[in-house]
Image (cartoon, rainbow, N blue to C red):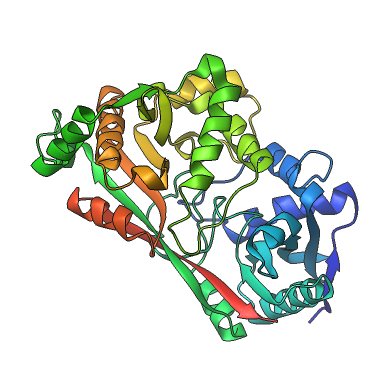
Length: 377
C-alpha cells in the first residue's frame, strides 16, 4: 500500500484538489448537494474571506501516494477566544474515504496544529463557524440537505467516536408540509393565534425586511441575532464581518414575505427569516454555475417548492411576550403565499428547548439529526 501523508495545502493547485475532493466521497450519493466550486474557493482564500483576518487557519490534504484520500481544516478563531475566554480550536471541511487510518492521521495532524496554536480542546466538524454545515449527519440521510446543512456518510460519526471524541451538542432539523399547516393555517394550534394576537394588542408590529435598505437591515439583524443568544448555552456570537458575508451571499434569494422584523414603538426587537432552499437548484449544477449565472440561478429559485426557516432572534427583555408566535405566523403566511410545499426548520440545538417545543406543537417532524464533537487536547 502506498505511503499515507498529511501535508498543508500549498498553492492554488492543492487548494483546487482540496475543494474538488468531496466529489470522490459522495460519488453515487443521490442526496448529496455539490457546493459551488467558485464559492468554496472564495471561502478558503485568505484574500477574500475576512475570517482569515481574525483566525489562524491551516488546510491539510491527505494522500496515499499521489491520490487524495482526505481533507481537513484546523483553525483558532482569536476573536471568539477573546469573547468567550475558551481556548477551543475547530476542525472542519472534514472529508475522508472509508479508511479509519486516514481519518485518524488527519485528526492527529489537526490536533497537533491546534495545540501549537494554544488550543486546549478541539471541536467540530465546523466550517469556520457554527452556522455553515455544522456537525456530522446521524439520522436523515434519505433526504437531500437544505442550504447550510451537513450531509455526511455514516462512517464519519463512527470514525470520530473511535478516535475518542465525545458529543458536544446535537442539532436537529424539522419539517412541516403544507397540508399539515392548512391553506388558512387552520391546522395550527389555536393558542398560537391567541398568543400572537395578544402580542399585537401590546403594541408589537411586524414588517418585512427592506431590501432597498439592505446594509442597515443587516446591521440590525446582526445586533438582534447576537443579543438574542444570551440565554442559550453552546450558542456563540458571530462577528459582523462574518454575518454580513453570509447575509450578502443569501440576499439574492430573500423572499421578503418570509423575512420579518417585530417592532415595538418603531424599534426592532426581534426577527425571523425563512428562505427558498437554493440547494434544490444546486443539486443539479454539479458545483458550477456555467452555463448558468447568478441571474439565471435567481430565476430558477422561484421554482423551488421548499423553504427553510433559518434565523430567529428576540431581545431577552422581550421574550415570553408572544413575539415568537407572532413571527412564526408571519413567516408561515409568507410560506403559504409563496406556494411552497414544505417548510424546513434547521438547525436548532438540543438545548434550545423553546424552539424544539414549538416545532413539536406545530406538528413538525424531526427528520434530521446532526452531532458536533469535542475532545480535550
